[in-house]
Image (cartoon, rainbow, N blue to C red; front, side, top):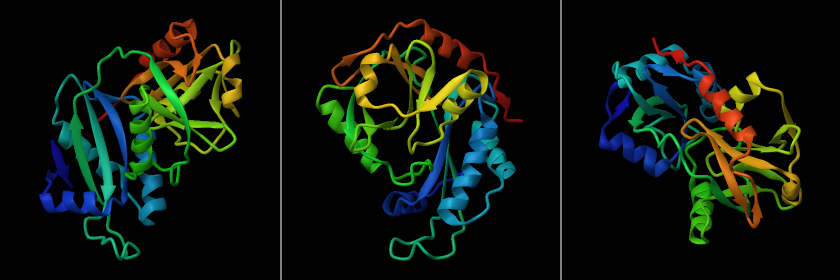
Length: 259
């Protein structure tokens, strides 16, 4: 299902998004009409719209369009809200923008996913604080990691300082603390929710420090908390109690109603 401003999207509008590829988005999991971290998703869209388009976005209007797309359905689904301007041209992106709202839905991922094996690579996303539609670099490195026999890519700077995964935040447990990398990363909603309900530390994490870590995990709205079994050649415990604790903590966070 795809709706632009509450109406079925036209091929021409989708072509503009695909060919110009200037926009931003958020993806939220909807469970029986409720969303964990709904205010964080809406705040992200408002903030990123100002950064990308220098325009204001009405969060209540966004919420109305999400409700319309969900249509009162029960069960679970993932809703993606993409903000872009179909009228902006590749040669003139500096024109005054009038952002439109594309809402799409898709099935949720399986509840239980296997632990990840990830490959570290040097990469920094453009405007890492923005969840934008420019996914070429992330998917290029994810593809490269998978061709090398891994599941996904973990980004670092040239000195080995860890930042984030291709489409997820990463966290570590050193035996005492849950540690989130201090780096230029997307302020993920799932990461933010976990930080609100637990005592966590934000500090630099380097590849050289992996041997001292007991566990690592990926987070985003679609996967929740997913264990990481291996980073490059370093094995980590994918059944560590902290992983079960973080998963239980996340699942226990109540969702906000779309109504």
